[in-house]
Length: 260
Image (cartoon, rainbow, N blue to C red):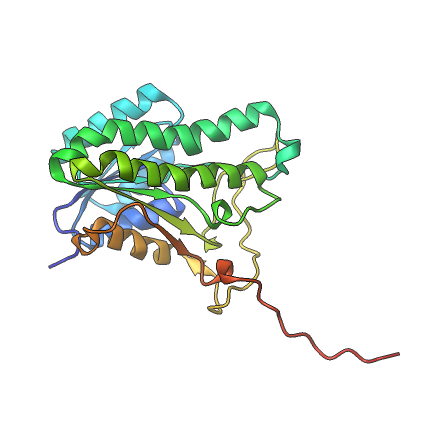
């Protein structure tokens, strides 16, 4: 039996990258999936690629009405809800001290408020099925990255949000856990300096101790575990999927230097 047979999942930001990989793996494990995203063209392409057990619903995670309507649409299509994957997110390449207020509002509204809105709207449906919430944060929420200062702040908030929700919804039989990916290929689509057009991350990262850059499938595998009955006594936890980067400082060997 597949690990997620007949499970009904809503994955926000599921049209590309990590969200798409999670949707793809959930489907392979027997789930039915609804994905959300702001770009309708990307959503329709993803829906076709994922196949007949997937449905796209257009929604902006920063818009409370869009969140409410997308949850209702997902529940109506799926006939209920077992798994919420909070994944929709955006980034910004800037030091925190240099971040414009408009960008602060934009990132907080999607990366933090959007997660809370989806959790609030999904809670009654997850309570009926004793389902679970999975919140995608980042290793940047564990050890901050100066180059993406506000993004790090929002992901640290997402980690604590997942813990507090575990306390709030546990009595409903609902679990809430957090995944913190490290450097994963493909990277985020929405990452750029203030005032510039979003562009995908380059993937030029230091090599983790495990010896390779992470792949979206690594995060998807962890999400399957959290969504499955194998983790039914696990809630309020944070799982770091980073190949060991946050384990500690790794001293790289250098070629011997010749004294002059």
